[in-house]
Length: 127
Ligand SMILES: CC(C)(COP(=O)(O)OP(=O)(O)OC[C@H]1O[C@@H](n2cnc3c(N)ncnc32)[C@H](O)[C@@H]1OP(=O)(O)O)[C@@H](O)C(=O)NCCC(=O)NCCS
Image 1 (cartoon, rainbow, N blue to C red):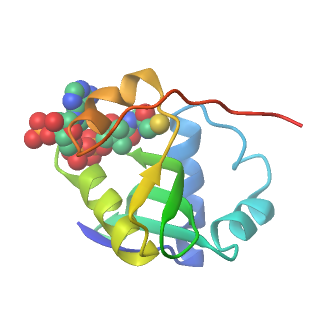
Image 2: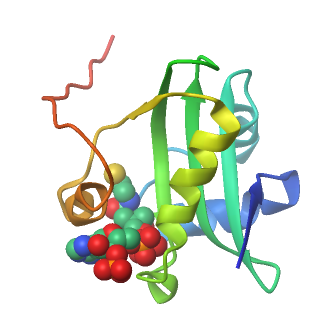
Image 3: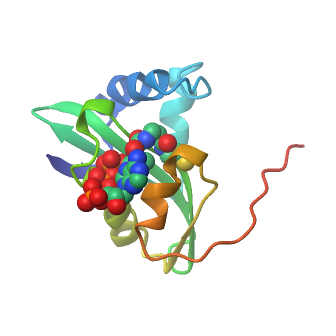
């Protein structure tokens, strides 16, 4: 598995991973999704197995202190092989951030708690 920066050719594969999780926001508008994943400050990483996108992470970073993980997914058939951990490591490396903040889904807690972390209550606000 190769872990590297997101490229435009990865978009379809990323949207397929989102659909498989029931996440509709990015797939709803692929042009917008591409804009979001390549926005200034966005750090987007793909994991490829034989050319197919099997994992993806995107975070927003200030470049030095904080990054915010927006999305992390590994294809069901590729889980528990260290790909999620590699994606997080690459987000840290490419973002330059000291800490990665995120809202976790309950089912991902085992993964996040396997990494060095501190827990804090989280909120997601809406306009
Ligand atoms: C969460 C997710 C990205 C983890 O990806 P992954 O490639 O399977 O994770 P890794 O193989 O790097 O796991 C690293 C460690 O995390 C822990 N871990 C991973 N998945 C776990 C699980 N389901 N339950 C308990 N611990 C888990 C283990 O300690 C694992 O190490 P080990 O396999 O040597 O025991 C993946 O399960 C996923 O895409 N889930 C669905 C989408 C999702 O919930 N995304 C996060 C939304 S906030």
